[in-house]
View 1 (cartoon, rainbow, N blue to C red):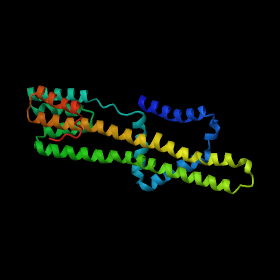
View 2 (cartoon, rainbow, N blue to C red; view 1 turned 45 degrees about the horizontal axis):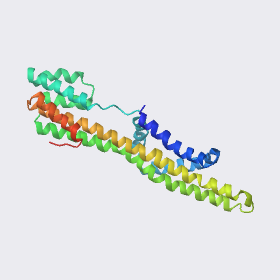
View 3 (cartoon, helix red, strand yellow; view 1 turned 90 degrees about the horizontal axis):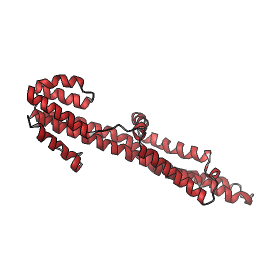
Length: 254
């Protein structure tokens, strides 16, 4: 589990409900199933209308990436590439053919196979960068889904509040319940703001952050494989790749 996500969710909801308690508000006043149904149903209903089912399913799966993100280890990537460079320098590029069979990462495996096949370095870069671009655009769709939901939630919360007020206005004859009824109506607004600002928008940001980390690794792999293909010194390749970490060059191009 990603400890930062868990701490953030606990702090976010804890601040809201803890603040309510400090103000002397009973938590039962904030627990309104009807408001929750309106906000959650309306928010994600609008989001479903906005995106194709494929994106929706992908976004649901990517919730796991928010709670349990994949561990990208740039240092490990550099170490592996230096190992490939040293082997290619000793035994030639063809010696990497066996390495390609043992690599688990599909992107790295494809890149090594292209190097072994003797593809032109420029073609190698173009081929791998096209795949990186597709990965980035495809992965961003999940973040866009949550960002869209975060945009809809506050408005849906207002709709819920208005519906509650309509109900209150329809029962003005009982003035003793007027204040409580209005308070309950505004719970939907709180729900909308919490869903947007504690769940949806942060989830979208977290997914984008994971994409950036993955792009750093993929661009490092591209630069490393091209350097290996050009027969560059492993030590020079290492220094070149470490520049990605020093300057955050996730979008570095040759």
